Length: 311
Ligand SMILES: [Zn+2]
Image (cartoon, rainbow, N blue to C red):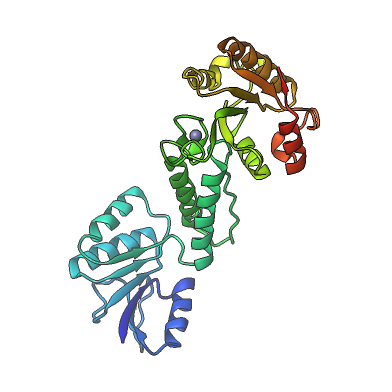
């Protein structure tokens, strides 16, 4: 039988917990802490020090100030604790880390399985989208919510941040990867004699969907756009040229979008690459002019790729 103290026993979550624990026969509430003390079957004191009961674990659903007291008490008495209070400041987080060296601490900004699953999904989505997407967290609350942004929102932000800190550009093709060299560049099955030059990592996903292209890629991370003040030196052009020096690459496919900027960038690169004796090709216009590659269906994109012409 696990003996539980609930800090914040008269609060909304405290009451829910009491009801749930009441339905079980392997644990029971032996005491509570809340601002309004009361005697009765379950004694409620104003502080843990005043509550004179033996317990195996403390569950805290209170306020940051009360959480700090709970952490000190649990550390002193080696009492395991479950911290569910949110809105903890940096000092309290440090106190929590310190307490965890002296007693067992289980902490989450949100204990719901759905939210924890959402955090994992958000992390995977952030890793898949890469660093070119902005991610916005919008939260809506009931009018009793005290801390905003909520602990749950911060938890989601941290999960996304974790995914982003792991991502960086592949040393060779400049696509986003968690490793030094991405999956495609390190695959022995890819044809290293062809490089397909694209504007963004999203375009790689579009080409990979065709399952027809087996060469390598190079991500420019943008297009030349004098109107926006973006010149070639702001794109990954020198990284591309560095890949063309050892004679391995026989063809470079310009797969920038069929827009004014896409065309200008393709022409600019073709002029740089042709003198190196490397074939420079452009996607055929099965693609609708002015549209984006990422929205092209597999067949259109494959036709554009197979019908590419030399520049
Ligand atoms: Zn790569």
